[in-house]
Image (cartoon, rainbow, N blue to C red; front, side):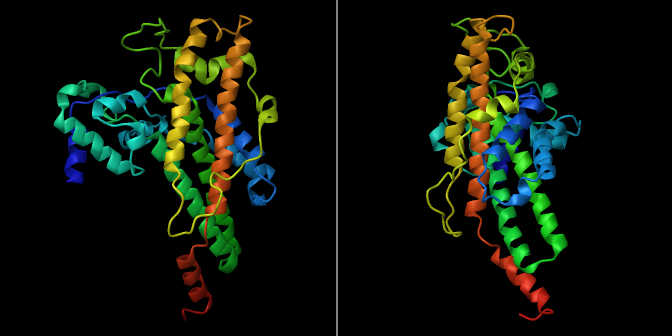
Length: 343
């Protein structure tokens, strides 16, 4: 049944198109990762905070956007929806934020079932503009973050096993994997703090516009980087507002029943969405015009979003490390190998 629903989803008449614009330019995403690194406590694994590792993590903040530059449709299909989540488009599918499942494919099946049952409720899509088959999706951003968190937690788990029973090369490779996961994960957390990645109004207001907000197709680019570059956004200017990273949960959960991160990511998206109309209002009031005195308010608004992303990312990294148990299966295999194949 799930397979049939997903096939329906892939071919049915559907709702919003994918977000074509990036969230923050590379400089903004890089700052988010740098802020997260600066928030980590001293007891966090030291290999992460060496100058070389810190630069690697900062560089990887831009990796998922670099994937967008490749024309391969399968890559576009799997990558593009991970960068956004158009919250308004849940209601036409009969869905609400608080009722969403933590499983990506279960959510996909729900979308497909809604379209199959009520195709008239959803706008049709021009197949000529849907070569990568993503315009039927409302986005997967909270799932992308949750899944990256799980991968990072796994990385810390198997690092523990290799540190106890592995070779120096295996330990080095496990550490390199963790740096990669941390860096890439940061991109999606940064996306979630950019209000235009939570809405169908991602690049100028669409549809009814009672407040007279801008419909400019340059609005997203202005927020991502144009305003940042012209008003002096920087890591040095933001790090003073950081608090130390803290675990997302008070107690460590047993490996058999881990804490659920997904609801926290939904809350994080809600917060970003709540800033969407205020962001449009800032533009309307001329406070995103670097040539005007009111731009200081616009700068403060975006600084708060970048800082919030770095803070959440640091908390997620710390929680993944703290919650990661030893990979006992891998440990058993490594012990067997050490003993010459004997259990």
